[in-house]
Image (tube, rainbow, N blue to C red; front, side, top):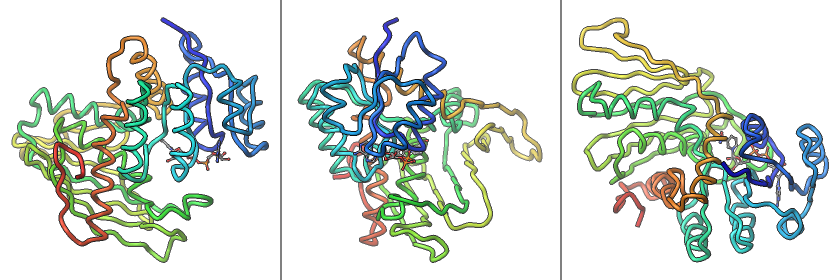
Length: 331
Ligand SMILES: NC(=O)c1ccc[n+]([C@@H]2O[C@H](COP(=O)([O-])OP(=O)(O)OC[C@H]3O[C@@H](n4cnc5c(N)ncnc54)[C@H](O)[C@@H]3O)[C@@H](O)[C@H]2O)c1
């Protein structure tokens, strides 16, 4: 197994997940460089994890770090200005979620990478951190029969500071992106239409929406109903997957199977994959794709279908209409 020299751009909150996730895999990943224009953030993180090379400027990092792959942990609002120069320099990229706030930007980056023959993968770490893959397996095994509906609730109180407060696309871009991606994993088919209403609560200081209700219809006729709130003083994150012969109810760490008439679950499955472990797995998918030439399951191309649902939800809310997708892509 080849070991890669990896660089990270952005030394903020999420970068911690990457350092912690990678440190258990020195046989695969060596973090040789960190880049952030904020010298305080840069040196604090580089000191903590013993990163030898430090850069405050992206071009300097690209030209002088000698990295073989790059992890992008910068604010979503500056995706293009960070990722395009990396692709131009021929560097494979592992990008934080959301790949972009808009399908147009995600498509532009994906097309540029295709032209240059550079793979990009996205850190959809909740595929494994939240039990989406676990439920996907149960559904594929026929445990609840044909799925009819998914009901998803993610409500809590969240006041961000800094760049996120300025983002016009907020709660769904921050959290919905995980859930849209998760519905796709479970159902294994494309979304065909999206309808959404969103609101911005005065309880939270931010430019974008804090609350949203979305319905996504999939090719297999399943309807996923998703409610998001960053303004709820009551916390709940729960997914209910309703099938013809049973229902699965999930939280972050477990999934429970209910049969007709049951007051308690017939079966319970645990899920203890941390965000850090799932993040390592995400980067490893990219590295494996470099070696095999086979497209990674978390490729940018695949992610366009997740971003399409996100973008369609915003278009639906703005234009007050049902938005149709073709082959999972917003057209
Ligand atoms: N996968 C997850 O579970 C998860 C969790 C949190 C955040 N994220 C994503 O990670 C990204 C970063 O979020 P965060 O919470 O770490 O933000 P943050 O504000 O904590 O950190 C961003 C860092 O990027 C740096 N930065 C700004 N401009 C830069 C530039 N031009 N070059 C290099 N560095 C620059 C900032 O100085 C800061 O240190 C976002 O896209 C967010 O959606 C993902």
